[in-house]
Image (cartoon, rainbow, N blue to C red; front, side, top):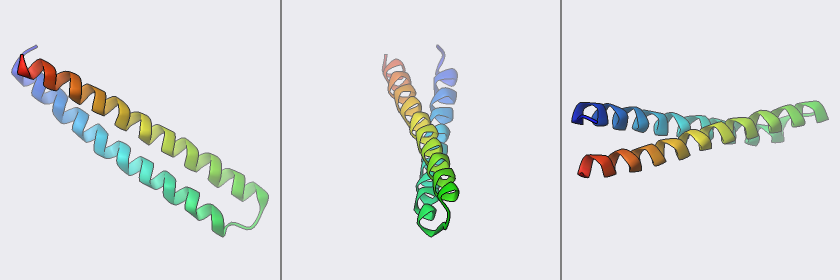
Length: 77
């Protein structure tokens, strides 16, 4: 890979890492909002939505960190 391609990949991975953190934080906020709901359906809806957002954000961060590690090792070669 050329240096330009590696730098572009690193930049995209860093953006995905930040976006994953935001989605994960939003999922935690939705889980916290579960406290303020009144019915069982609202509790379950908030819990499922929060857990889905946390898992998507965590997956994005995990994938971005592995991509960053892989591209940095290629950059050093």
